[in-house]
Amino acid sequence: MCGIVGFTGLKPAAPVLLQGLERLEYRGYDSAGIAVFKNHKISVKKSEGRLKTLCDLIDNGNGMDSTAGIGHTRWATHGKPSDVNAHPHKSQNGKFAVVHNGIIENYAALKNMLIEHGYTFVSETDTEVVAHLLQFNDDGDMLSTISKTIRQLEGSYALGILNAELPGDVYAVRCASPLLVGVADEGNMIASDIPAILPLTRKILYLNDNEIVRLTAKKVEIFDLDLNPLFREITTITWDISAAEKGGYEHFMIKEIMEQPKALSDTIAPRIKDGDIQLDGVSFDKETLQKFKRIHIVACGSAYHVGVVGKYVIEELTRIPVIAEIASEFRYNNPIVDEQTLVIIISQSGETADTLAALKEARKRGATTLSIVNVVGSSIANASEHVLYTWAGPEISVATTKAYSTQLAMIYLIGLKFAKELGTIDSAAFSEMLDAIKALPEKAQTALQTAPEIETLAQRYAYLEHAYFIGRNLDYAVALEASLKLKEVSYIHSEAYAAGELKHGTISLIEDGTFVVALSCCKQLQMKTMSNIVEVKSRGAEVLLIACENEPFIENHLKDVDHAITVPSTHPLFMPSIEVIPMQLLGYYIAKARNCDIDKPKNLAKSVTVE
Ligand code: G6P
Image 1 (cartoon, rainbow, N blue to C red):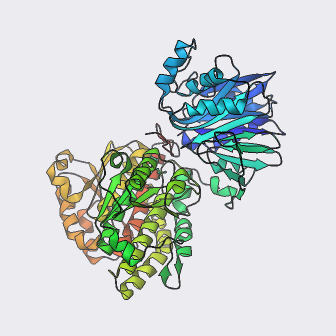
Image 2 (tube, rainbow, N blue to C red; image 1 turned 45 degrees about the horizontal axis):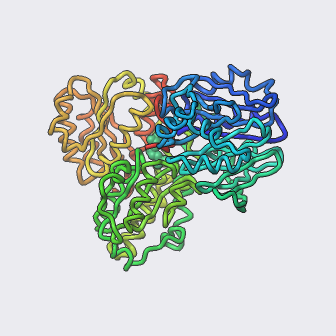
Image 3 (cartoon, helix red, strand yellow; image 1 turned 90 degrees about the horizontal axis):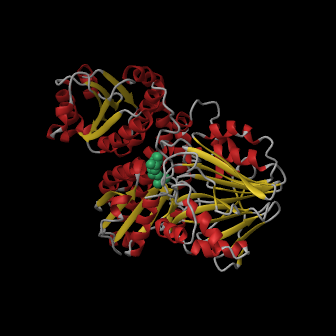
């Protein structure tokens, strides 16, 4: 939700902090700030607006020669974006400075207690509570002061902390918010995510909840809450730094759309061996699978839309009832899950607060949990019984594309593997579907060739106020994602409807020129969807049809629509992977034509670590 960094080393800290923050801006970008040591004090510079505003304000850190500091890029939760609410926040006596990602849930009670003890607050943030609390608990020993302070905090937090009396030291702690340590000869670093650390080093230490870390230029020490030292293995990050850079593309979103064939191949290929599917050691035998009376797929945002596809695909393949649920609803619904339930959790970041809470709730109730996660070592990965990683690589654009696609691929692999174990599919159909999954990267590559055509269409639709996406069955599941993609990056109001539902109300909104995107890749429902297309056309809608190429039925009906984009066909259950590609491109090119800030849409953040 916010991005935090910290550095201490043998060179000026400010440029390292600013470079790190630039790579974390996807996490929040409404204000930014840094704190460094200066003349036995802590100097804080912060500003509302993008990181660029801060960089201009402090001349990119030139002249700030301190070799240690912390930094923050914010997505406002408590208190509007403003200079004063921007982090870092200082304690009343100026001794401590704090940057924070997450939410201190009991901040109001702590704030009242501190006010009663004479503390005055200058910001509206929950974070300022932590700064004052450090002063309140200060016993002259920094580790014990931090330990006492975090024992009083409830909620989720990753904190970077400076103490004016310990120049050169950077302290950090995490609880249900991401935080990593980078280790290098030139110095040591903390950050919310790997891309911020990669310019300095590939050597990473993962931290667990409630661990305190002390960084000096030469040393990294980790302690538990009782201040016992802990040992941690160094992990070497293997992906290339260019994976977190634009590499000649104008935006991360289009780069990541174009990377989908490779991401799909990286996710699928290692799991297909000798004509079978191997799920990284996650294996459920027939008896275990038969025990599951129900499968719940729980996630947020686009990952939830993958869950909707999963409902159709896994039910069809295994005949086990599947329920796709939004994590923020599931967790408070008194969900009916027990030892006879499998809960599949889907999350790119592995940090989404509601999804993490849903996972914990499911475990508490005795369900078996299997998570599909992109970020290695993330909170959801750590808290799950079984984990399958999507190997999409770093996804920087706030609007997800390649992570969504690799999550779909994992759902197909899981569904097909379960069906084989259960015996709900014969071996000929299994092999045919396995071949279809193997061919997805190539088909996705062909679907990407629709880009120039869609860019031209986008010019025509760029200035619309509303858009409707319709489809049935799996086309409806993709319509949900297509609609979200368009609205989140272009700010056009858009909605997705199951095509058969239109006449139960929504059709009253259709008038001359209303833009309707009709997805019709489900062959067995083409005729039904076509009837709905004719219904909206006759009320004046302008229809863009998305369909499979070389389909006689579609070719006969091209006259009934205004535009048609066709994509290569694959097994009907896997069509979402192909038909979503023109939909991602449509969102991207319309947003580009509208001159939107595509990689950082207003009010959004990539990783939502608050409820
Ligand atoms: C945010 C992102 C979405 C994402 C959702 C869930 O809203 O902008 O792209 O689908 O969070 O995130 P997760 O990391 O759990 O997949």
